[in-house]
Length: 128
Image 1: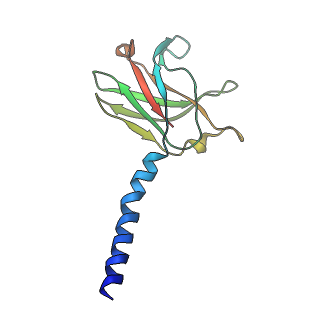
Image 2: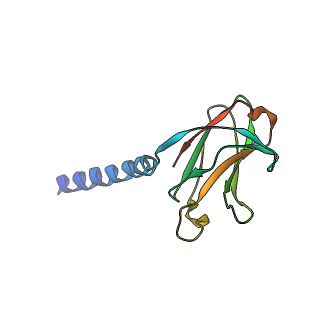
Image 3: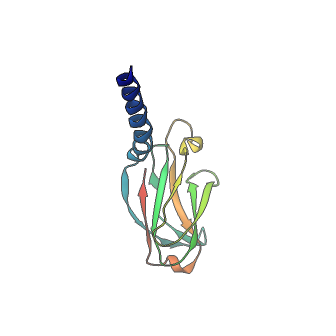
């Protein structure tokens, strides 16, 4: 009986420990995207990035704290605002469930925007 309790405890512990790692493992590195000034959006933006519609993580290379906004790109209508995060050096942020922004049956295409001049020459690592 004691062996069963130990076995069940070990199995439960393994499941609990594996859950956060499997959630993180689902994100794949997509690349390092530079910010360029876009006069139409009066801000610094990355190029448009294809996603799988799940979680989307950004890790900017910045030396100052600033806000990063994520938008769903829509060539025919106004772009949809997804959310924002204030990030400092070494910080990352994960936007959850981009599938809510899918245009029809296609996964959303997104871009990262920041409006401060300090974005010049900086970039953001993206995980999808």
